[in-house]
Length: 333
Image (cartoon, rainbow, N blue to C red):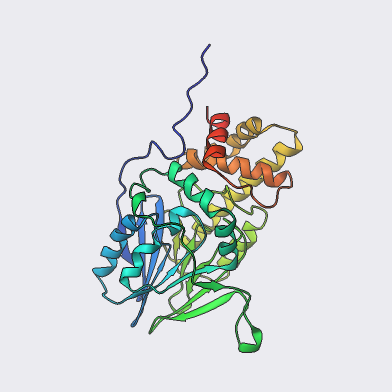
């Protein structure tokens, strides 16, 4: 008897271009979304522009830059890396020609780039061939020039927070806690109640947790809920408008994370192997989330991480292209 065929690896079968939406949320804030592809945010001040999440490649970033240039010709001075994943950061080089002089990230993100950035770059290029179709335009890893660290209280600095005045609008950059990675950073425009969450929050799309801190993630989501945002640009999914809809996105992400981690803890407690843990997790995840974009891509990585963390592996193991394929063949056949 032949074995069942292995599902196409990660997003290798997803070659359909997505519809791009570039919409204004408030006086200074815009959302760049693409039907479940990674989102970016744009904040346009009177003097400078900030982009939150740079896209996967400099070639891909050109589309976002074109959208920005339909509404402003100001220099794009700041690029925020909400975390270290290649699909978010490797497009940063394109903004240099648009005036970008500062690339912002947290200390945690800088540490992760040093620790596993090269392996992640190779891994993600294999996972997302459509998003990395312009990979030859990538000069190398993206390194921050401005790091959000502990802050110096004697100078009036708030630990872990940075405020940037773009002219007429102030953006607060801070690390609200571990979640999608241990270095997640958000942009918050308090005067307009707009939150750019990166992959800490998703909506109606797969929540990738392969490098996550699952135990702490729910508390980090509650810290974001306390902001009472009226708009959120999640990492994937449509921009949400109105506090009730912002909370829907937070609830969606929290349900994914808690359901997944609970299944992982049950699998470890039941002495299941990873293959059995995958089947066990599907019982609770498939009925709720099985229909969403990149679900089948995310789930094996997510189950592996949940199983590891429930087993006491606090620092996520590094994904390599080789490890990706080994895991995929074991869990997605």
